[in-house]
Length: 56
Image 1 (cartoon, rainbow, N blue to C red):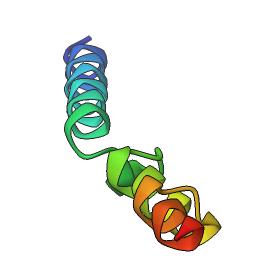
Image 2: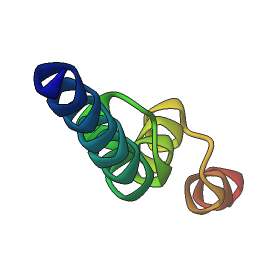
Image 3: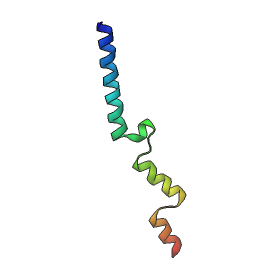
Image 4: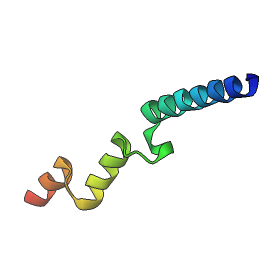
């Protein structure tokens, strides 16, 4: 019985740790965060700065 309780506690701990990392450091767990979205928009040329310089 103690082994089952230990495994449940371990599972809950790992799940909470994963959720915390996913929230604060999304790129570490494969979630596209703000930084990745900004980089992707720069690669596509969707930034306002780049579009302004092209218009001039």
